[in-house]
Length: 171
Ligand code: S3P
Image (cartoon, rainbow, N blue to C red; front, side, top):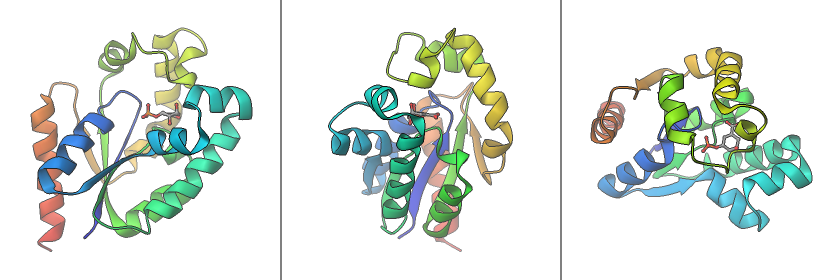
């Protein structure tokens, strides 16, 4: 049973949508950031502050290797997994990759009251979102299945992910 791997920028709904899809399809939901935090015994912001982003990326890389060796998972990835093409390759071997996107203003609205994403705390949030989106545009754009959630209800996003998954299952 292939995994469903939700990729995309921070605040595009990977975790919320992933949890609902997993529940509805009887699959197991795994949130990468939550696993990393649990194993490290500290939150993502602390990992970035204490150990640096590179260390976080290497933990993330090891977790991708581990999870792509499993089956029947819905995986909510961290927004930065696309920075390493090996991550995208490995997840693609055993899973359906779906990239969720949203307009910068919708992303800003969703993350505006949150403080747990270190990359958005480094300067004015709206500006950081535009900068990081621009830097990653091609990386996200290269994922074959795309859902622009900007004007969608969450339930519609869930349905689209399920439809994509049943399409690959019946092939
Ligand atoms: C990151 C996204 C975060 C988290 C970390 C870095 C990124 O995950 O992994 O703060 O580089 O885009 P979410 O996309 O779940 O917020």
